[in-house]
Amino acid sequence: MHTDILYLHGFNSSPQSFKAELALQFFQQYHPHVTLHCPQIASSPVGAIEQLTEIIELKPDAKWCFIGSSLGGYLSTYLSEKYQCKAVLINPAVKPYELLSDYIGQQKNPYTGEVYQVSEQHMHDLKAINQQKITEKNYQVMVQTGDEVLDYRQECDKYQRSTLIVQQGGDHSFINFEQMLPDIAKFLML
Image 1: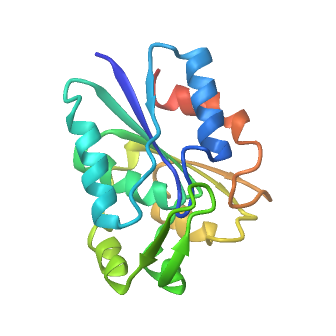
Image 2: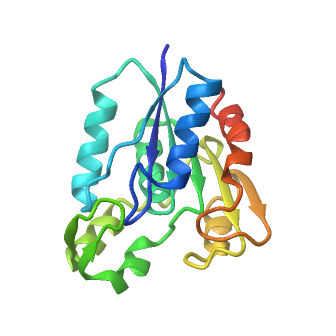
């Protein structure tokens, strides 16, 4: 069975983000039999879920895994529960519908230049896909205590029974991410 990984970037990010590019290089070099998909995710929650579901369902015979950063970690949790697949989450958002309410209005993605609207409806849509109960064994969660965007304690609480890696210091980008890639591959059993 072919393994496909779906890498989900965070809010206002893109496949050109540093972590996405590091992941792509790592898997091409060390796991060339694995296909890493890293789409530009739609800016609305409903659009994102439809887009990602379509990608997964185009290859129903693949063994799917997810790597999600920040908001991508939140979306990965939803998809992991829906498809019962393994997911590695990097500084994942736990309550993005609270955090992103400060961003309602016009946004511009610094990577793509896309100008779009974040609405109150987006917050409701994010809340609607929140996963209260998770399949703990399916997650490896990597957090850094110096994350200036998210409270790492929320992540530790939600994923306390999963494989949890807590590093002191760091920041939201996850400093030294490249050093974690062999552990990620091992967890995903590649």
